[in-house]
Image (tube, rainbow, N blue to C red; front, side, top):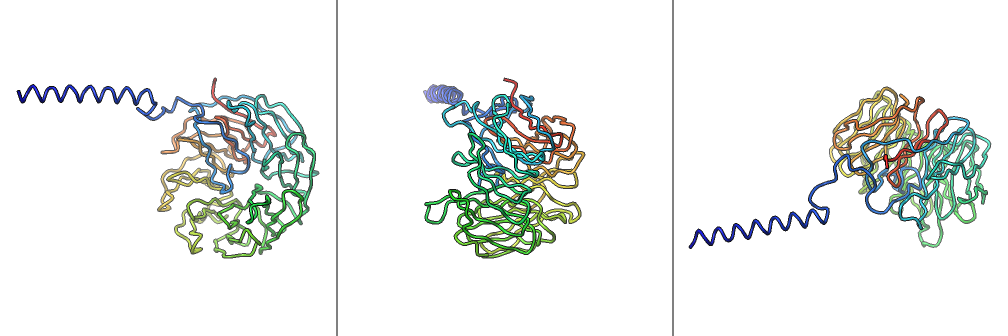
Length: 403
């Protein structure tokens, strides 16, 4: 009788386990998606600015396939150092309708149709445009070597206003809400050694923060603080409300790229080969990484467990966020000035060797690469399961899945 009872319990448990497994399969919970499954998951999300979000984390939702194909390329007359910004039509749930905005060294800002790469409009600035545009509320904000911050109508390219600074603007444009929540502010760093906070509606400066030397990268937002690096070898922390400096942290050399922030910490690298993690509350260095010889001009991307950055040693480095220890490094054949982008279990980055690389985030294994033929300093943008990047050959490239 006892044996029969045990057998009955075992049979019942087996039935329950099979049913649970079947239910998990129906719900899509039985396993993680394979590397080859590809394609975006969830609603498509835009990439409206440098490194996608105000913290410059460089992470896109969804997934990318393990092999990409060239969908289209758009030609400009000079090299593209600028990184693209991607707007998706909110009325289209497929993510197939939208626009890609990018600057070129031919002095133009371009709007390109996301679906086929056809030109929609261009705006002539008068000098090279290396900064990444910001697309916000139907307006494109972008800086250039003219020293102006431009506000352009996203649909037509018509200029709404322009604010003049004293020198080139090379970094990405950021934005914030005013402390009272009533106004939108535009944030831009200039090589005139000044960070500008600009009223988005009027184009008038709200405040300015002057530092000791050039600002090459863009500013990031961390709550009520703005964080940016300078060629004065300092990471600056200023109040969003009025631009007053709250703290600064010394680095070993000038900061060429933009910082990124996550969970109360800032990640920033300098041109003497040191990559730092800084606690923003105490303004203290938590860890440092790097050989002190190979410069960093790339900006970091912050994934869940690692932070990634390109280096002049021709490698993309993945560093443990908690300890600052190397997790892996992937070798290219040229300087990695391009800033990496993370999407799901993959990371994409360009190199001066003329290739765009797609790597597995877990261990840096090469999944795919594409030879563009000329150096890639532009940082890739990832939106709706596609990758967009510029190159020194003057083309803007769009890659996606085979489908």
